[in-house]
Image 1 (tube, chains in turn yellow, red):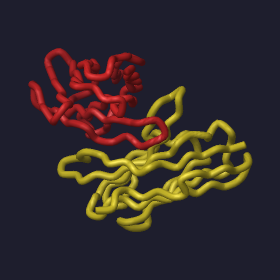
Image 2 (image 1 turned 180 degrees about the vertical axis):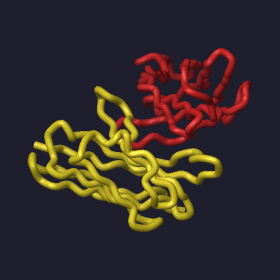
Image 3 (image 1 turned 180 degrees about the horizontal axis):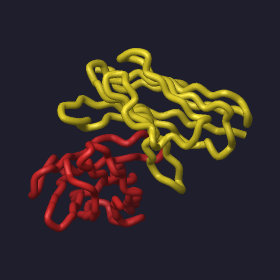
Image 4 (image 1 turned 90 degrees about the horizontal axis):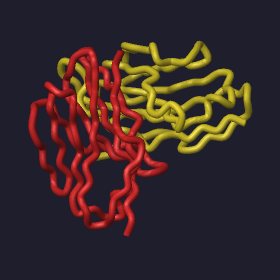
Length: 115
Length: 109
């Protein structure tokens, strides 16, 4: 079975540009999570969706960040405008859920560098 | 507040045994997870404990004591490929995963 798919794997952009990260969750999973990981702050939850609906976006740093999930097999995380402090690895993860999300499975990540 | 504590770094010798501890204080408890993360890669699921006791899975075992807010990951017969970071995460009453900062395990020949 295919795991979580993310694209691009690497992104280098200049400050002020728009960045769009993409994620395809594991088929049948009804939860999708966006994380950011840096050496300083570790793994941080940005937002998560249940059945395509955003449930908790309290981790989104500021209005420059937005996320959408138009259908069960696709989600995007957009940063506009990007800043050097946004440089990090961004992971997407998905899980089944009953009362709540179950074990999370991570995609390979997108390494973002903002110059 | 919610808090997960684990050592920043540990060193062990190939073929030996190492125990990585994790203590937690969270709003409720719906299970504890251990993930392995090799440098430059994504976290991968290792184990899940929701009841007290030891769960064994090959060379890896995970223990939980809910009354003490404590878990450990035990790695036996260490191999060089076990060099990685090990992340402890607790699912709270809202089914949110609270992540520890990770323990970097260095294996020496």
